[in-house]
Length: 91
Image (spheres, rainbow, N blue to C red):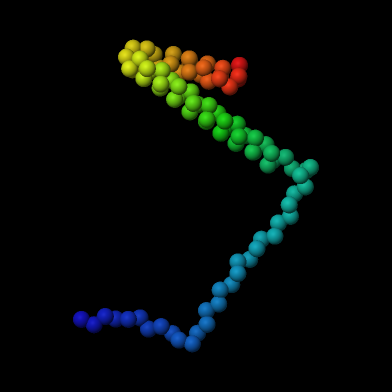
């Protein structure tokens, strides 16, 4: 069986154009506070996610300590939440 090879054009130049840069004017910091509010909100969300993760781990370890026998998962969560808040002086 013969293998079919594609024929390439020779002698042609291929040019690559640089992408067009979009020019935008940076807003005056005194006029816009959208960026700061958004960054604060994302930090708060991130902090809350970290807090919940720490509480969930602490609650899990409480249940593990008693070998997952008896107890109440809501109570484990509540106690773990109090412990984490005390650890970081949040109350």
